Image (cartoon, rainbow, N blue to C red; front, top):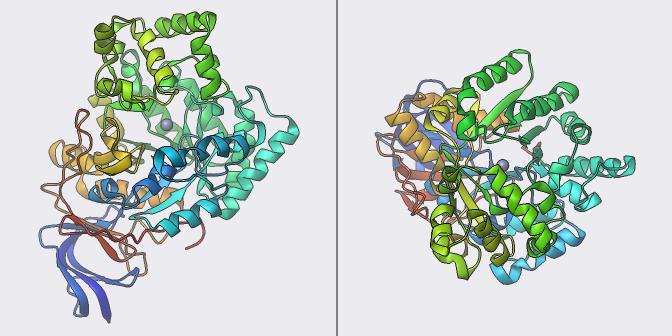
Length: 529
Ligand SMILES: [Zn+2]
């Protein structure tokens, strides 16, 4: 047996949740060759993993950012956080399909970001991804938002039978090409215009392929229960497997219902509905600032929204509704600007809307409109809308995987703008450091399973997310005593500590805690391995 790398003497946690044992892990080429207490084999390189945990590479089941994947191809924040696969295409937005106006609108990004957006299909994006050469592997869901836009633009109405057929064909094409399922983002246009019947018609296609339906459900606070009913209804009626995206109970007034909601989800699972969840280990969410606006104000996309902000009668109505939905000053204190997306408001990044409103002598709702107007509608926010107690309740559930809900970034260069939610940098390490080592919310072998075997099984990946002979050599070696997130809300661009080695398809992307610059990731297609 000749090995390319021999990882010697670490505590192997294989991703199944089984107790660990001290063993050697042998890598040959892009695969795991052997896992055994003592491997006697020649190896080109030997890694001493004494005192360290050797696990499958972490799988971030809830990621975003087709463009960021290409703008920061080394994916340093992910690698320092132990991640070897991220799943794009969540919350209704995916790299594909893109056509017509959608493509035209994004194509101008070459000037702003240095990357031309010219891909239309999964195949196009996968080719581009692999040509650029990236530090980690990626897979993708197909976004319902893309599918709907491709067929009916931004229309706020139900599809005609022909349009629905066309949408089903788009989903079919994406699944055939290797998407792992479909996602919706039912608070975002145009996904939000879809009735359950439309979504279920598309879920039938996904179910036929054994894919996953991941949803950012219609409401995560006041309307959480009926939004979950709608979501689970799709599983009941079509048999599609369900992934409840970034599960949470949002808004102080709703925190008290967490136990009831969790019991309800457990009941649904006990019925035999294939439902699981993902969650990021933080109590703040992050999304576009425009999502504070009522749905009608966002209809049609950024341009019509900006026109409404500029039209006095519409503007008054928007301000009235935004103020009506946020009567409590504490709400404004709990929202901070993430990326101002324009130079004039850089000073606002990392600061609360209440502070900024005071400073500028504006009502917070007016300030939101000022920021949206100045940023061409692109500004984003971080909102503290959850509580630690409930977060730990979610993390304890054995069917909750860890997903960052963020884009892959670097601490330098074009993706280092603004004050993004720290989950972009610290998700896995925060889970393993704060919630596993310090708070003991989950035992370590199960914690590793939530980062590896569980997401792999949700996606249907058989040769990833597990450490065994024959599997792809995506391997993360970390120090369980020191692993920790360092990214904060004020200083988010800081890599996690404690990840010592990361192998992606057999090659070291992190060696002795340092980025090697090796870009051995690939785009993974469903059914291709
Ligand atoms: Zn979402």
